Image (cartoon, rainbow, N blue to C red; front, side, top):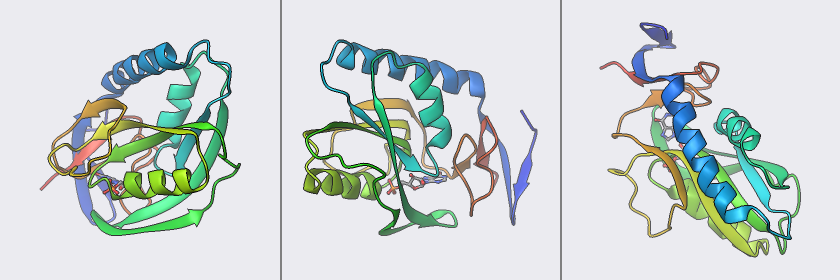
Length: 181
Ligand code: IMP
């Protein structure tokens, strides 16, 4: 792990090493496998671009039932703050009508994104929607929507790495770093 990283005008320090993320992903995958193994339908794994690419790839490798990978791209963050306005930058790459969907998110913060996503998927006719997130900021999350699979809970701080960015930088680091105030 790097001692410090600098992205744009901010410095970040080590926070969650990759080994810890792997253990959390193992545990989430075990729970999802237990719920979906042996099912007759083909559930959709919905990767929310760009943030959850790394998590989705790691998670998929560990799932041992037939699934279909679908993506869509949303954006709500600008800089280090959630704007509260969710933009659909790219729609669903396949229809979800009549299908069971597992949303794969990198992080749930205010929950605005998850609420909007659930609404879109139900409107598009998904038969069931489950939410899987690598990380959750429980101090900020205030929505009534149940989070079905959570990898790890973290305090309310701005982080980068493992897919997460600060103005598009930092996604490629395999460990997670936190802002150094
Ligand atoms: P929410 O809508 O407030 O729950 O925010 C969810 C989205 O904001 C995530 O999918 C991320 O893309 C982004 N986000 C939230 N917290 C962080 C963070 O600490 N670092 C980088 N991106 C974040």
